[in-house]
Length: 77
Length: 404
Image 1 (cartoon, one colour):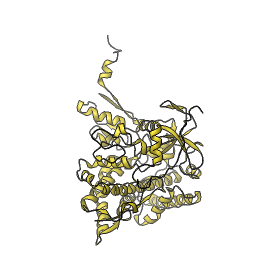
Image 2 (cartoon, chains in turn yellow, red):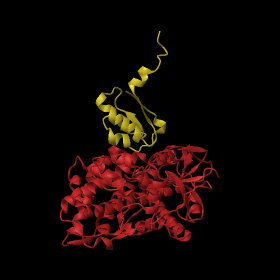
Image 3 (cartoon, one colour):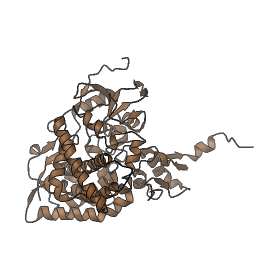
Image 4 (cartoon, helix red, strand yellow):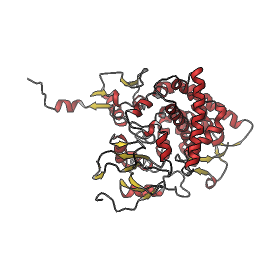
């Protein structure tokens, strides 16, 4: 699973930090979201999906690996 | 014209049913059962769309084509004769980005989850001291006056840098500002008095800053005195009246269903129990107004540019598919064991409540401590004698006589 955050869309609601404090944090300087990890275990997938779903600003995107792998590999060959 | 439904417009704001003080007004639940998108008639004689379904409410609140800017002439007003006051003194909840984000971000640092977590010992102390005072030599008290209102008032005073000794003044003015019925003159006078009061504090803090929000706003050179006053009024009003009503309503409701109180005692189930109370009670029961800036299709219906819509949180939060389930009580009942995390009691989209981490911490600490310290807590009046507050935009209780 790939996870990205769009800090321009972050409204600092804190929903992600509340639900997944190991994965997300709020920056001390600008209060906007930051990822604390870049690699994710399958056990974290459910809470990542929840965090993306509950983000009021739509700042968190999760891409399932299956979908990425199923897409045509543009650079292949 | 082609998109106007045939169902009758729901008069907003609608009253709750006698004997059902914890359920949304029947007019809203009936409308929700008929259509996820219907019509509302407003106190000023205008009409607008009314979104009652979870998906529609969420879509509206998270779509920037729906504006929160009250200066738009078609912006729906839930209270008659308030438009001019709001237009002249908009807080950032009535502005769109980028101006909304600019002003909101000036105070987000004070409501970070870690900042609020660090405040927990202070909140616990405030809660304990309020209970000490309430129970000192007595066996009966009004929980609203002695606990539900003082706790969040003390917390927001601490955070903003407002002297708690002035509570009679700002609590009364807050209530006037939230009133559904006050005249334009009364409400304007209350706003002017409150912003003048906060302006005086800000001027003092500019000379002698403290470690509080008003001091941090006071020393900024990119905010006008009007910006600071409207943000201060917003934080002060939203910071105590909402949580106060959640504490009193939650207590009254739990005293009716004492078998559920045990879930508040376990730190593992307490946060989820508070989410369920927030969902079930949804005290912003009149919904959130927006106006469409472009034509937007919603479930087969087109909301046209320039049309208003009210996103009703209370009915959205009763979505059976999201919150029901075979092993749970129906979504229109309280079930503290339910996973209620998808509720929208704090709204949704970029305007979602800034103070929600603080509200959660206050509710968790206040309710858990109240029932732990007073295991024999019970009503000191029959349920039909309880006085609920339906005359303000935030639902709540006027008083709650209890004994222990």
